[in-house]
Length: 134
View (cartoon, rainbow, N blue to C red):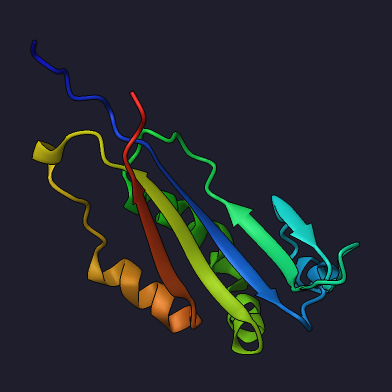
């Protein structure tokens, strides 16, 4: 039986969170409406949750992982300083996921330019590879 290589899927989100983060303030200062957000507070179970502001990549999941990161970087480019200022007092993460469909395909590559832009923001990069269940 011969297996066909499936197209891989990737996704990325910029997540900013902290106990002191007011997502509405970040939305107001950047003019960017997040794809998901919630304020800091206490859950019904008495657990503390951080304020959370999230911007998702909006391009096709079949495009390479780096394209997803670029999608977010382009969207925040006009307000880069405001995002960077916020990340200085919060946690900023480019949370990425990429599908590994064929061990013969190799991995993925993130250019030094993209890594520098992420680092200049003060954000970290988390990449979670996953293998689909077939």
